[in-house]
Image 1 (cartoon, one colour):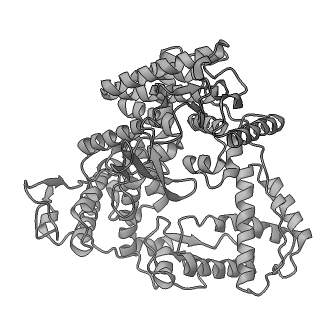
Image 2 (spheres, rainbow, N blue to C red):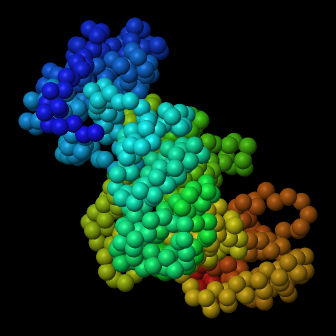
Length: 615
């Protein structure tokens, strides 16, 4: 029960302060073996302790630091990070409420969180979905103080507000702590729904633990309102007619398709789980259809043209080094910008995410990348230029932010390049150099996903293997590839028909003489040579033996290009241009010169094909 103002005022506060005098000074030694089980060795390092103006509050901060080091045995690195983050309290706790408080627990949590967010942002610390550790650590300190000042009696099912720590301890102790410190059922007015929601929630905790996404309780409030307005006591007789009425009700309240789909999905999940658990008052009928979700048509992709990309690459030097590197890797690999910017140096098992396999021909770069959309780690092959850039970026990040730096594109020990920052830099570069799009207007950098669309569209247009393309892009399945195809159904069918015919002809005529080709690409002196079909042309070398130049056909005197592979040559040229730019920026003059020679050969082939000449 909530305390009255008088009871709150007369409440006796626990005195929180460090017992060890080493935590009362200006700083502590990180090499002190009395404080740390594995202290720093070598040169003795110190870290400055937080200093809050109010003595009561300052003692609570020092007491927390003593607790994590002495009682909870935090490592030197973790303790140093907490201390560094808590130093921000010196400028956060400037208001009158903090000057007169005897404990942080006297400050309401919502007020404290607002003050923390405001203070951090005013001093240049971004708090975003993927850069929030500083904010989280400060809030965890507050919750530690609040727990001491507000002792509780453990979990009780009948309470409408559950303390997260109690729920974890009782139902899923192996689950780590979560940012949400309370679970609220008091916004549900229907007694049956409130009771059912608690049972479902407990069953979910038993099954998968307490997830950070507990918004489904908020989503159920829409179902609660619908039941209240329609006099529905429970869902034992809930049928398709009721489901359609609920859908109409949600349509009127939720104009956003995304929110509507989330709410409907949460209600459907709740009903299925309750039915599976045979909860009293819940129908076991499946009353929802797939068509109940709102489906918005995906807009056609709008990839950048060759001319637009060339203009961007020409002025890439105007970008900051970290943004320039990120742009080059985006153009080479086609990753989601959010995944690349947040790429981690280490995998969850603390082994390097970026590796180089010398057994691969020419050396093979690979990277484990966490995909936030699919919520999983995936292994991707890297082009050489991309691998070298990421390797160098790791070295730079560690040099600037220390060996415990977490991110490849680091902006701090525990923060990384934000996609919005990269987008801003690109816009400034485009504006400063007056770069125009194909429509004659200033080139639009509205969404970095457009770079992924560019790479994906090229791969789809050139490849007959959707499985390979969706794996390369990190898609869940090849159905998503339709988002990147900018052609009509008729064009797609006609194009696939032509591809199948060409493939059938090539397979049927392997080993036959030159008359298998129905274009003007065969050199006049080819005679009766047997031409072997390749992925981008034909090889005139005899079929027996091994070709040591198989990966560099453009340098092979026995290679004959074909006009039917113009798109492949254009794609090769684009990739070589990006790789050449990357090599020049890194100072690899030999690689850049090699790429330039390859570009000249491709230009000669492309010019001949586009000019109608024999190639």
